[in-house]
Image (tube, rainbow, N blue to C red):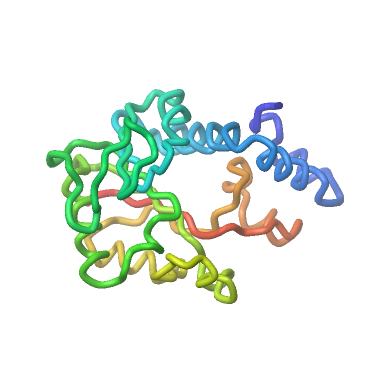
Length: 214
């Protein structure tokens, strides 16, 4: 598989149709691990992320190797871990690590499974507690404006969000927003969105929020 960086904005701009974007999307489907590696590599380089990462809702730990390949020390936590190296914990009550332990907290399609109110507040407070000063949080979640017809088809989906609501929630909780925008499963086009998105009708997948502790 070719590296994502071989596909640059010039190539997309020079194509009169969506073939290049379809090709990238198909490659992502064919090799999910390669996509995860490209995604984490992009994040770590673009936002200069180093040190220790806590992957909340890590499941089978599929992002362990991509984070480690990017030079980060990986820790996973999940309510129902599927691997021995992942810690078990109900994050709405307690994240089982000391204060100021991590440089990054990563949550991919997790927050929509947490009931709004006390549970969400407790989770965010715990994230802030275990993050080092200046640490970053990356949250990826479904976008209610895109998924309102099918959001509750996933039986354990509880709390829908829009870009505005997720940003307000986290800012109200004392987190400074770096970006909050559409999430597309092709990392290299982020910096050119929304130009490419509207011109080539790229399918949006959700919301990505990146913030930092004040």
